[in-house]
Image (cartoon, rainbow, N blue to C red; front, top):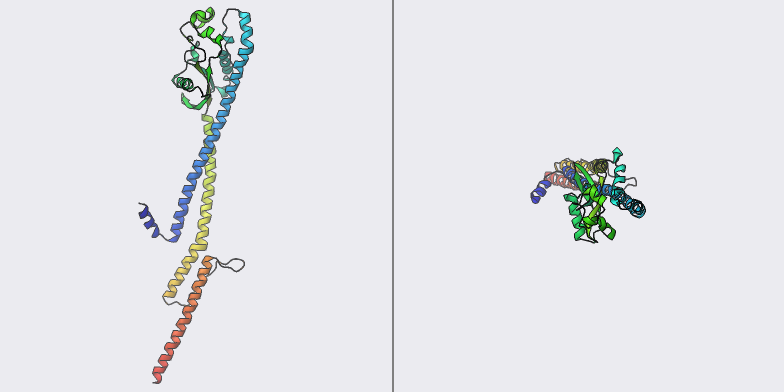
Length: 320
């Protein structure tokens, strides 16, 4: 097929060959540019989304630390044996984030401490989140996972970090039901949130950030960038094609027609050598025209000599 295409190309005139070659260059250039710009836009968009998610994840982490170090000790001391959910870092972080989401522009942001066996069932890990937790449990050296998922036709970018049980005090509420505060059992029951073990990973802290708007902006930027690239390529293609036709194809066509005229006996036809620069030098097309002119001059001289010789022969025959 390639050989057949090359054979057909040979039968095209020079102008069409140039247009075809430039068109191929145009298409390939557009394809490479589109691939490069799309990758660049996608990376930029993902970095922007990732930065938003990372900031929110670090903020919720700071809230957890604040609750655990300053709120929980005071509330537990004052409440004695009464369980208060406000003393749980995950609860405080989730509640503060829900306040953050009350702004309509942030309603598609989500924070969840997805747990395999949570006390509060709103923290129950869904199948996708369960796979993330399993990944953290199987590969303990993994400290962060990120990517995209869709929820209710919304494309979300997520960042997940494992949460390991490192404090023995956590087992008071999550070890055995009989060790947990009675007020906690009354609130959540004794069927969920128990059986946790020290140094195990049961939870993944996950931030979900809406990606549709950022990706839409990236697509619009891609379209604008590609429109500019296509316009630049098109103008360049037009200028190059115009230049080639004006300074190469047309002069060659004129020389071809002049050479045909000379071959048919129009010996006075002139080869036009217009490709001359400001210092009197000719380019390749101009030098070719000058070479044809020199050959034409030599041909004229040869013809004149032949005519003179023929005339002498006729005169000699007449005198005899």
